[in-house]
Structure formats: structure tokens, C-alpha cells
Amino acid sequence: MTDRALGRQQAHAALDFFEDQHPPAGDFLRDALDGFAATPKRVPPVYFYDAKGSGLFDQITDLEEYYVTRTELSILDSIMPELAERAGPGAVVVEPGSGSSVKIRKLLDGLDNPAGYLGLDISKTHLINAVADLAESYADVSVGAVCADFTGGLNIDHLPLPEGRRVIFFPGSTVGNFEPDAARNLLKGFRNGMRSGDAVLIGADRVKDEARLVAAYDDAEGVTAQFNLNLINRINRELDGTIDAGALKHLAIWNSEKSRIEMHLEAKRDMRFAISGEHFEMKKGERIHTENSHKFTLASFSTLAESAGFTVTKTWSDAENLFTLFWLEPCWEA
Ligand SMILES: C[S@@+](CC[C@H](N)C(=O)[O-])C[C@H]1O[C@@H](n2cnc3c(N)ncnc32)[C@H](O)[C@@H]1O
Image (cartoon, rainbow, N blue to C red):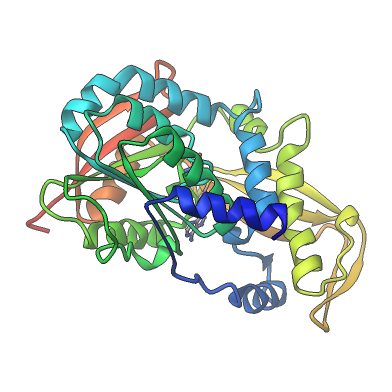
């Protein structure tokens, strides 16, 4: 057995359970072809997160300009006793889009005897390794992982999760990557599987000074540019693409009307290329739209949560109001 396969097997063994729901990987080709045929061109952001993209995202979270992660972590630190009280003893934390499972350590350290943790992510290798590390650190907690697409709702009721109040933890303002209707559907999907007493702890990035927002998505070291261009490298590698990534420039733009940062890749010259044998052209200056990060006010996020069937029962922000954590409970009369 290779070292890599052995490592994977050991990581699996550390978990109480692992389920692969086989999120439809085959759609990458369809989505890329449709996206490049559209005007303007686009690629859905879910494809950022192969193993390389997940690693680059981790590097982004450490950047000076990227205030999001450290601000959210500092809020978590300051509110932990209150969170422990709200969640109560023996809670089961479910984390859709768990990524590197870093923030969850704050919760597992600070909650009152948490009974379980379920990491759910579309990026399988990264998920298994990250959740296996957690399982080793928290021997008293039942730790499992599921490779799934969270946009289809959380299909987790058949999994061997411990009994206990479930807290769905959705940090990082990942909700902001969705257009308003899709964000509402995503939250409704979370809401559907919830039982009385369950709650959502969700992080949302706030509207703020434009220069600060743009810098967070266009850092001086160019890590976010690499993250953006990784999409093109993936298309070339996995979909038999011939796109010259060096001819594309990373752009981060604040769209005030839609209250979001947009990431694009702009052609530095006229380009011709193929994806799986289909031919495309880009004119100099033409863009591929790759990501949206919506930014919220307290009011706009509350309206979104309420439209998905939740009541906002508590909010916590940092002193500069850069970021807010919301505690949502299902609104049963909705
Ligand atoms: C922005 S990262 C956030 C990671 C971590 N929760 C944090 O706050 O630092 C988003 C994570 O969601 C995962 N993800 C994105 N779209 C997904 C989807 N549709 N279904 C499941 N996971 C998804 C990615 O693989 C990535 O690990």
C-alpha cells in the first residue's frame, strides 16, 4: 500500500463514521461548458475547492488583509461561556462546509461536554484528513464526516449521531457566496431537518469601507489570485482544457448595488482555447465571473434568516462591526 493510501486508511479509521454521498462530480464539465458559453462567462465557485484550492483557502485565512477569520475567531473566544449556556450540555455540532475544521475547535473546547461533531464538505480528501485530526484531539466526542453537497439540504438523519440538541455551525460567511434566493433556499434546507431545540450559529461578513473589502479579496501576496486561477488550472487538468492561465488577471470589485465583492478573471489579450474539445474565445478585457461574497447589515441578514423560517434570537459583533455571529432558531409558526 502506498504511504498516501495508508494515510487515508488511518484517517478513515480515526473517524466514528464516514459516509460518501457522492456529490455529483461529473457536473463540473457541464457547468464549465455552460458557464463559458454564457454571457458574461462564469464558473460556479463550488469548483474552487479541490485539494489545492482548499489549501489555498487556508492560506487566505492567515493573510493580513483577510480580517474575516481572525475577527470571527476573536468573537467566538469572547462569547464562549454564553454559547455554552445556549447550546447546553451534550450538544451535537453539525458543520456544513467544514473545510479545515479550525473554528470548530473553539466550540468543542468551550461547549459543555459536546456529544458529537459531524463535518460535511464537498472536498473529500481535505474533509477526511481535517475531521480525522479532530477525532484524535477529542476522544470523548463522537466525530464523523460526510462528503456531500450542502445545497441539497442536510441529509443526515440516518447517520449514527448521538442524541442531543443539534447546533448547525456555518461560519466564515460562506452564506455570502450565494445569491439572495439561493442563500434563502440553503437556509431553508438547513431548517427542514431541524427539530425543536436545535439552532444555527452562523457567521456573516458586514458591509464596510470599500478599500478594506477589496484588499481582503486582492491581497498583496497574490494568494487570492492563485485561488481564483486554480479554477482554470482545474479545468485544464480535469476537463482537458487549453486555457492560458497566464493570460488571465485576477480582479476583485465591490458591487454596491448588490452589496457584494465579485471576483473575476479578465483576459489580458484576445484568447482562444478549448475545454473537452469545445472551442471558446475571449476578447481582451472580457471577464469570467467566478465568485460573489455578499456583505450584510444586521437588518439585511435578519431579513434573509426570517425569510427562511428562522428567528434571530441573538447577535454578537466585534468592536469595529466587521463581522457578526447570529444565533437562529426555527420559527415553528412559519
Ligand atoms: C469558505 S470555506 C469555509 C471553511 C470553514 N467553514 C471556515 O469558516 O473557515 C467553504 C467550505 O465549504 C465547502 N463547500 C463549498 N460549497 C460546498 C457545497 N455546495 N457543499 C458542501 N461543501 C461545500 C468547501 O469545500 C470549503 O471547505
